[in-house]
Length: 82
Image 1 (cartoon, rainbow, N blue to C red):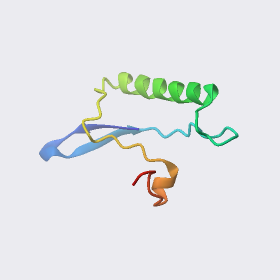
Image 2: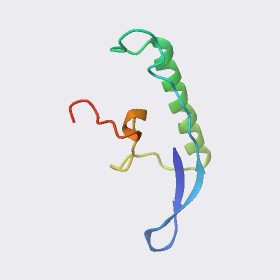
Image 3: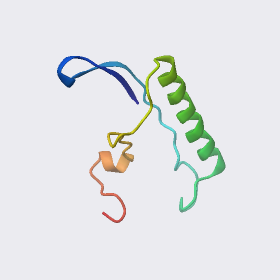
């Protein structure tokens, strides 16, 4: 997560960053469904992100600029169906 403020000429200045590994797929099996503890970890991480944004009075929106790549995508592995 990145919180930034807009400065001159449409540029932005990074205020803070937060990175957190949630381990959604850390369970056993084929991972066709998320286990409840994985869902809980994901929801808790999102709540912490929201709290951080609120602490800076930052508006929370995607606006088509939100990216949350899977670890495989960062390594160049295409998404399913791509």
